[in-house]
Structure formats: structure tokens, C-alpha cells
Image 1 (cartoon, rainbow, N blue to C red):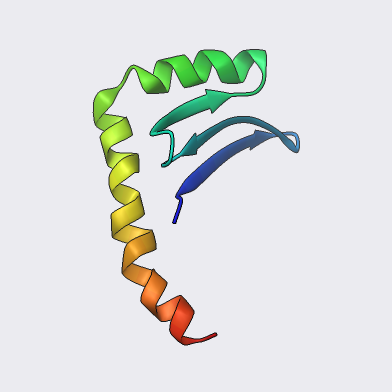
Image 2 (image 1 turned 90 degrees about the horizontal axis):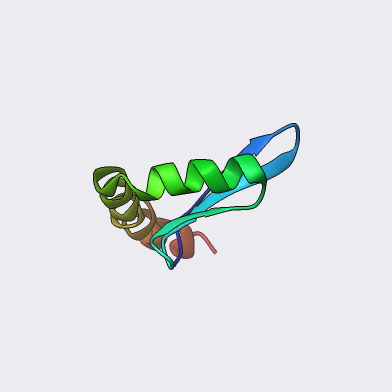
Length: 67
């Protein structure tokens, strides 16, 4: 299970957080700057890493039982 949060502007993805990496990755010049800023905030990274357990792991049993 992987938690992904993507950020878009004008249909172009400029940054993405993935729980497998545990940090942000930038895809554009602006996205690289934002990713560096967000990666420097350890409390924000910890919050997003906790989202995997709070949202994904909590609901995985519900999703697979409906299949």
C-alpha cells in the first residue's frame, strides 16, 4: 500500500509525496523549490507519513471485502 499526494497546476503535476519515499519529489522548477521547502518541515512529513496508516490501512479491509 502506498499513499500518494500529487499537486497540479494547469494540468501539470509539479510535486508529489509518496509514502514509499517518505518525502516530496518535484517535477518542475517551481515543484523542486516547493519540494525542498516541504521536505525541510519534518512535522509536515511525519503528518503525511501517518496518513498512510490513518487512511489507507484503515480502509483496505473495506475495499477488498467489496471485490
